[in-house]
Structure formats: structure tokens, C-alpha cells
Amino acid sequence: MTDASTYTPPKVWTWKQGNGGKFANINRPVSGATQEKELPVGRHPLQLYSMGTPNGVKVTIMLEELLALGHKGAEYDAWLINIGEGDQFGSGFVAINPNSKIPALHDRSGEKPIRLFESGAILTHLAEKFGALLPKEPAARAECLSWLFWQMGSAPYVGGGFGHFYAYAPEKFEYAIDRFTMETKRQLDVLDQRLAQSEYIAGDAYTIADIAIWPWYGGLAQLDQYGASEFLAVQEYKHLQRWTTLIRNRPAVRRGRMVNRVRGDADTQVRERHDASDFEGKALDKM
Ligand SMILES: N[C@@H](CCC(=O)N[C@@H](CS)C(=O)NCC(=O)O)C(=O)O
Image 1 (cartoon, protein in one colour):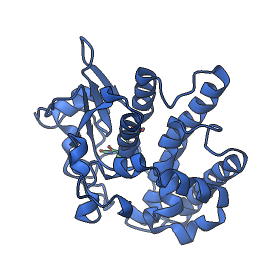
Image 2 (tube, helix red, strand yellow):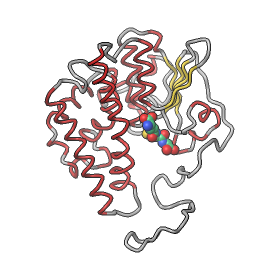
Image 3 (cartoon, protein in one colour):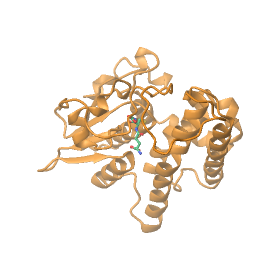
Image 4 (spheres, helix red, strand yellow):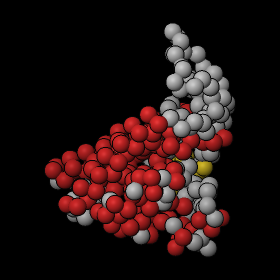
């Protein structure tokens, strides 16, 4: 590593493996599979390949919400793709997501399987398939989709920007931390002001916009994501705090957050989910 103040970029960048960052062992400048590996397939029409990260739990929360609403066709098998061990570069996974990131879904309910990647596309597909959690009335639908896409565009500044430089980079760069903290706090304020006006993100009803936004911004607000609660003064966002508690207490959210989870107490982890009985004996109250 070169000191931040003395580094001059070369004419053409070349890849130095192992740059000291937390994800140095899995990050590469090229795409595609690195190993032949078939994906397992269970008995349900929906096959999810994921991990319990903020992007992963959006989909398991959605599926648990659909099941709670009585949509039996939302039964699913959730298989663990351990991104720390490079499972996202297996040939079977890359065939479903050429971008090698979780979550990815195979909908095998029709004549031909449908592959889906990008959590926003997966949430929209499931909402349309079951006619739930995405309003049909044009203005309400537009508001919901606007916030859904807001999350997709905004969270990389939190995860890849703020979280990376505050918690994971091998050195603390004041410039990078300042820049991404400013943007993260601005986004927290956007949500706080919005939630001062309406109970849920897109209005009076709970929608896929809440499901997409909660894992990232609820995580910052109450789960000490990146160990940054105090640094970001998250208690100051009162309306965001109210909403975070409201969503957190939903039973389907508690269940969804346990699926493909590899951290925390053993009784908070359902590493693979194939059936509702997989939650038996688990500590939902700890979530
Ligand atoms: N925009 C994507 C982001 C997906 C994403 O970044 N997934 C991360 C985990 S939270 C991942 O799989 N990282 C593995 C890697 O970068 O190799 C989505 O919403 O689905």
C-alpha cells in the first residue's frame, strides 16, 4: 500500500492481489465463474440462493411476509451462498446471476424457469406474481417504486462508501470517511423527513419499499451496523427510529432475518430454510 498523500495513479491500472482490505480475497477485476459447481435444488417452486446480508434478507423477509399473508405458492428453499468463501463464483450461481452477487432467485413455477438477480427485480417480481405489497393504483405504485429504486441507488454509498472506509479499509482516510459520512447522514435525513409525513415509506401501507429500505437503514438506526451508531448520532433521527421499531417487530421480518444467517447466536440462525418447521426452537425474540 502507498500512503494516501503520496500515491500517484499509474498510466494503466494493474491488479495487485491482496490490497489489505477486508474483501481482498474475494474481489477481482473480472467477472465469470472460477469453478464448476452445480446449485442444489429443493422441492419448492421458488429456489433462493442467498446469504443473510442486508441485500439478502430483503428477499427472505418478502417471502415470509407472502407466506404470512396466506400465499402458499411462496413456499421456498433458501440455500446458503457463502460470499466470504467465494460461492458466488460457482458456475451454477453465475448462470443465475452473471454479476456474482447474492441474492439470486430461480422461479421454477412455470413451464420454463425464470432467473432473477438484483433484489429490487426480485421484490418486484414476487409482488406482481402474488399481487401483494406493491400498490396497484398508479400514484401509490409510482411512490412505492420511486423509493424502491432510491434504495438501490443510495445504499452503495452507505455500504461501499461509508461502511467500507469507516469499518473495513486498512487505513482511515479522513477525506473518504468525511465524504461518505456526509452522504449517509443526508440519506438518513431524507428518510427521517419522509417518515415524519407518513407511517410507512410509500404512504399508509407497508410495501416492498419498506422491505428494501429497512435492512440497510434500520440496520444503521438500531443494529449498530459498522459499529457506527454513535458516530452517526442515529438516535437523532426520531421518525426513522419509530419506523425501524415498527418494521423490526413484524414476525415475518424476524423470521426473514434469520434465514441464511451465519452470524450471531446459533438460535438466531436458520442457515438453510426448506420449511416453516426450520424456525422451531429458534429465538425470534432475539431478532
Ligand atoms: N444491487 C444488488 C447488490 C447485491 C450485493 O451487493 N450483494 C453482496 C452481498 S450484500 C454480494 O453478494 N457480494 C459478493 C461480492 O461482491 O463478491 C442487489 O440489490 O441485489
